[in-house]
Length: 95
Image 1: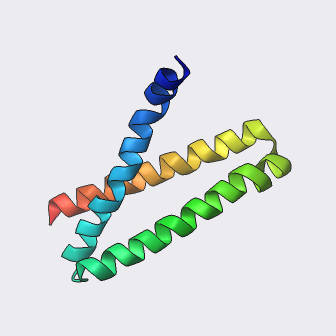
Image 2: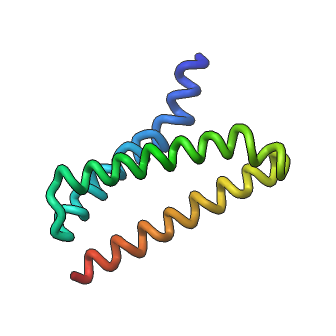
């Protein structure tokens, strides 16, 4: 039952997060970079961001802001990234 609940709660977000890297790699190749270079840069920044975000969310922000404010920061950052991705997709459609 715990596995099913965890799959239901985390499955869709994990699927969507995993789908961003191939999409961004495609945009990088359209921008004139080779696939290897675009994917390498994206993977580097993706990994660095994941490490920094996990460290901040686990160790820095709860101590500095408390858990409730940390959740608010996480929500705000997620919304900001989502809006930015949506705007980038609209610019790509216009081209």
